[in-house]
Length: 323
Length: 284
Image 1 (cartoon, rainbow over the protein chains, first blue to last red):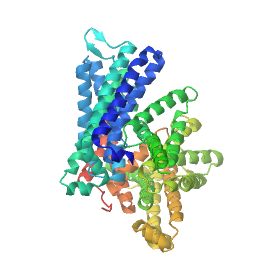
Image 2: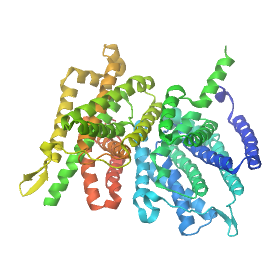
Image 3: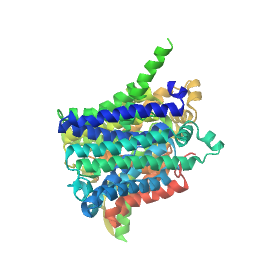
Image 4: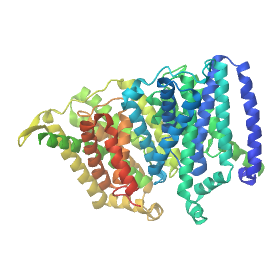
């Protein structure tokens, strides 16, 4: 496999080059696209970040979480509430959102990380439903089922609010870009390689002297922080937050994005996220039965593309290399 | 005193419904290592199918049989044509069962609408019965008895029959079981169908007391998870004891702390996870 022959340094440089070109192209988009499509790209970037955060767990550490929307959602609620009720600006509300995501993940991680495989799937799903239950039930704080409308767009300074769509687009582009760079940095660091080692064999890694439990917890919390960043951006984008944000449907959707794109590659989940967001927008224009369509996509991906788009391209590539 | 008695019986009867659900979840996992996320949909579809049969024929017995058999048929199709191809592939399996969960959930809303519906109680059990100093609905007592009967039947099936022995052999070592000439693939289909049948049974039986509504599929799936997390995956005993524990916790939680009902279930689950990650009766 080509991925294994390249050293961490060249992967890091190659990816950075692609990323810089990508960011430049994205930076030019407001001059080309209408407001509607610009909004679509904002959504794609947010969900790409969300999907990449989950990939850190699934693709790199080998821990399949079915409750990742919990961290997206609690961060969205925290940021939304602080901005709405206390009028905190983005410099305070956003880090507070990330902190809440990290704390939730630490708490959930302490329980979930005692288990593996199917138990881990079940427990992460169950714990995320607890978060959903709180958002749904605690009406006085969260507004229950109605959610919290009218979350203000972020203020960079008391006089500079990002209400304008183009400025907001750049705000998301910069933060999602920083998030992506950090994620690339993490997976190509020694820490990231230790995570891959844990994915392949936990016993071997403990024999080598790694504290596996600590690495798994660190990956779990880090991944939640990036999911939280996506959640914070999304609450600013939609100016709304409801229990749907941390529902199992959303956890499943982000899992689909990761697998559709190709777990363990970062770029794959980002592509998967962009595709699903695009499809959702196109299909919801024609039918209200998006959930049925989504369900069919799940089944098709599982049956025909379990290694994802990136995996498919790689296999084709490998076949051509050795005829 | 009356309060405690009545609420305990309510909890136990709900626990029996959860047992029906969790037994299938647990059996399917034990044999096939599949985490069936469609299990809540089997429950809900069972309820809706049962309601349709009752409206058509007026017979509760036919509703129970018809709905459970129909859902078992759906299970067979799912296993034969989809899950079989993904044997031991955890994530693709999760995707497929998620996919069916979404499809069934959306279609159910289209067909039966968004309003909660309840099933009429069977004529014979529609009254209350005097138990010592107070009255208690006979239908709930019937559920408790029915659940215990199913538990006994499943036990006999697992420990007392040839097919149970084959299932146990395949759980322990699938490869060797195949080599001995056991048709493990057929067992997979049978067990999956049985699991779907039991879940649908829970849905129909629960119809008169819990009802059917959009989102019930997710809700019971979650409770089913908690039951098998507490009881241990793959264990019939775990499903029964876990079902009773969760049924009681859920019921008393709703009575005493209606705002925090979920916590009364999840706090004990967290405690058990901390002490015994594989559940009370799960294998390590």
